[in-house]
Length: 237
Image (cartoon, rainbow, N blue to C red; front, top):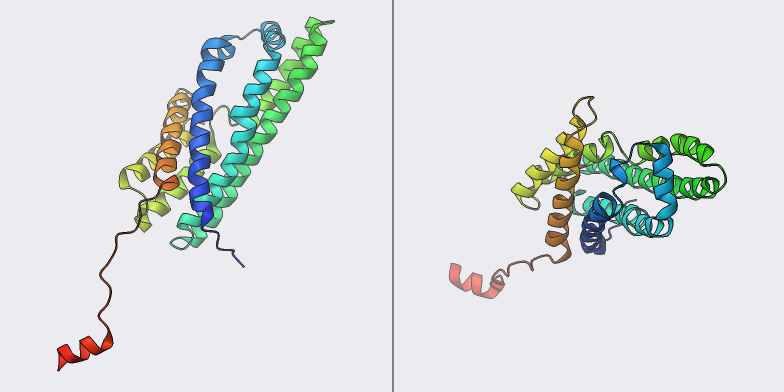
């Protein structure tokens, strides 16, 4: 039996806001402060990991491990909003969303443990550390959706389509979700990897939008109370 949990609706909204805020905080750290994506040499990557080991671990905790847990709440919150309108679609979407959250958590755990291993190796054998990182990094990237996040694309397409048909949320938000979902699928096609950056940024927009709409829902408009039966009978007479 399905358990009705209305509080998940607001909880999903707050979790979505956390996901968006964590990603916005991660971008300047990884791209500008550490500049990890621009480094291609494995030896230089290991040296960078050793230099920023503590701060990178903490940033991974905030922007990936806790985000993975927040994504579970978002997935269940979205499911609570839309299940009554599209039960079959939302069961599939919920399964996809939970799998995606689990893979993200596995990705960051592999990255962090591998980072600790190569940092220790780097002090005594830098070449071995670089070789070890060449094995660990692709596994962590693959689990994290690097090279095209198909699962996020499928989840957003299912959720946005169900919401559009049910007339939940706003049409603009749902069309943004459909666009981002389609772009995420296309980013997995060889030669279209540039879409991955655009998809990531628009996904943050969608999480912000969903969080604002659902964390502080508008109160329902009051409707006039029905006339008592005696009044209706007198009017009919």
